Image (tube, rainbow, N blue to C red; front, top):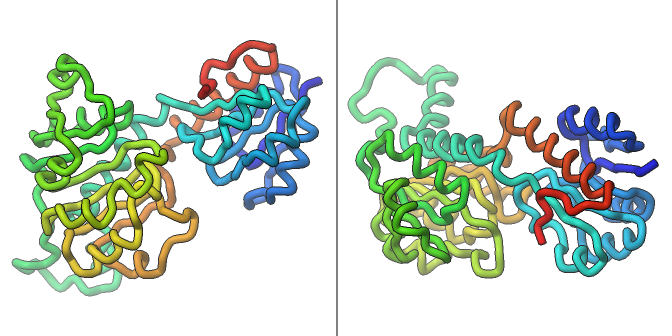
Length: 320
């Protein structure tokens, strides 16, 4: 009987599908990330691993699984936590859960955009602390959204969903992507291509939807921040290291940009105290895909990838 290990508990649909497929399961039901040594032991003894982005699946773990481990099924669209090249050499499939979380993540990006632009979190705290004594002309002034310019960095599935939602607010949408979309796609989405510097200079809102690669690491750094308008609001639901967090904090503290909405962080789950103390930032705990429907679909995909791989076939979401 093939054996499947979960490094962390995920929605029950995965357990149900894998049990029905006849696999033996081990699930980490403790609210903690497994240690490197614990995952090495799982790799040695199980045919499939279900992992999270917080699990660092490095070459040592993959080498430990050689000969036994058939698949690492990541419960995420990203897979920068896994040494894919080492897995490929070892003949171990690496899969992810693309597509299903695009709507949920785009919705959260918009929620962050609204929350920062209209100072929702700050206002909520103000009211709860009993400070509201009546309407005031300058109380919590924010920024308009309708008719403004939205710059989208990265135009994959999530970026496209972000652009679709911008239509309802009659926004001008600029986008930057390494490989430009076709003229037809641009027209259908109502978006305009711009180089990165132009997008940064002209956008009132900048939303990041790019994967983390060597090219995108610190894509927004000192030079890029220096080009931004003082009313610029940055939204990041992609990967934390795409932004140089120290530079972001400096520009927020000095009010050289208006604000930021962040769902991801450079050294996640560690968040700098300076960032936590700022009132022009809204912070969420990497919950871009956190809807009941989306997380269930992701769990289902994880199970389907494993079932296919353990039949000796190429799983549908193999990343290489």
